Amino acid sequence: AGSTAILIPPSIAFVIFTVLVPQVSVPALFAAGLIPGVLAGLSLLVPAIFFARRYGWGSTDESERKNLLAVLKDASWGIAAPVIILGGLRTGAFTPTEAAAVAVFYGLFVGTVVYRTLDARKLYRVLVDSAEISAVVMLIIACAGIFAHAGSTLGAFDAMAKAMLGVTQEEHLMLAMIMLLLFLAVLALVLIN
Image (cartoon, rainbow, N blue to C red; front, side, top):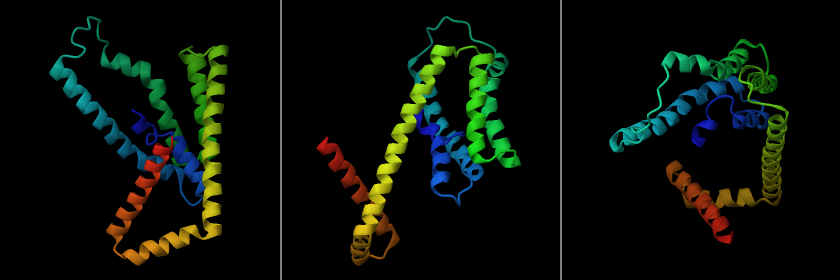
């Protein structure tokens, strides 16, 4: 389900993208991510249900199934998070940066007060994990910035663009060449490691 995490609000990737590209609206990105996120979720859900029914997976489970309304009531605090975030952004109640803070404190409140699953030890572990993830993301962004600065300063990107434009002017072939170039770059990195 990792494919839906980047699309369904609150998506950290969307927030970081809007920080790097100031003209982009966070509410618009969040709204744009909902439909693809739902489609990605359905593309995971439909085959899982199909194969579970076809091969009888989970049919030997003797535990009693809960009522749908009871499950929705239990999950209402989690379901409310995107509604609060998107609603606050759309109404102008808070900015994208404030939306991230609201999401953090809402999750902290729900985890400690409502569900009571976060004690001091688990909260410390969550903070350490989030600091590690943030450090990795910031390192990637810093390295990408260095690469972009070096490539533009040395003129490597201009030379590559001129060479590719010398081959063809057709958009689809250009896109195919760029994809092939990226594939070869990733393949080289995989082979090196």
